[in-house]
Amino acid sequence: MINRNRRLSLAAVAGALLSLPFVLPRDLNAAPRHEPERRDDVGRRNEANKRRYSPRPVPVRGQVRTYARPGYRVAALPGGYARVNVRGGTFFYSGGVFYTRSARDYMVVRAPIGARVRTLPAGFLRFTIGARPFFFVNDIYFSFDERTSEYVVVDPPMGANAALAGVQQTVGAQLYAYPREGQSPEQARQDRYECHLWAVDETGFDPSAPSGDLSLRTDYDRALGACLDGRGYTVR
Image 1 (cartoon, helix red, strand yellow):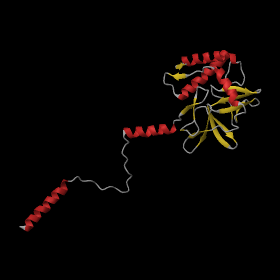
Image 2 (spheres, rainbow, N blue to C red):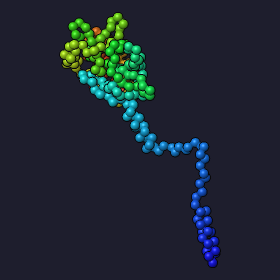
Image 3 (cartoon, rainbow, N blue to C red):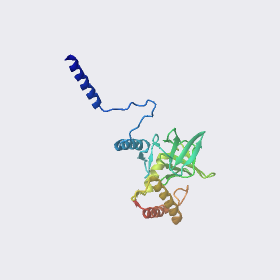
Image 4 (spheres, rainbow, N blue to C red):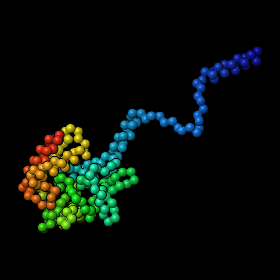
């Protein structure tokens, strides 16, 4: 009787084991399988990368444009950048902003004294101390080297604050251009540059030149605004 009950118990256990799902043993040499990322995981990762690489613009006193401040990083340099060598160091310049390269990206840095560039972004302020002209944009002071036609980063000259205050009072309203058709920042910069060239050709006034007839500035601004409006920007 005892042996019969024991046989019945063993049969029940065997039946229970056979009803369990069968899993093949894992090949320890096989490459690990990766489950596809869920959509919400991908979205969170992309948003984190966007926050890391997108420079946060901060308005600069007396000027319309906004600029990324030192310490912010970008994944790639803007189009049309220039390589600038200063005392053995390599920098990259574009639109009033200086960058250095790191292992994985580019970081915005303070303008190195002595750096030489060919162009200044629209919206800079020109002032004179004595007979010497200076230029101010993105908290950077430039002088102009007539021998090489280059703008040179300099320390703030003595009397710059008072001179800038007078200039800012006479500049008047400047242009804001909002991309109403979803133009990218790169496209907006290209459109503004091409409209700048057109406005210079139409009015004979170039605000990026070290000297010029300031009475033509209003005509230049009107021409620039008309060009930008025709390219799909709301201008104020």
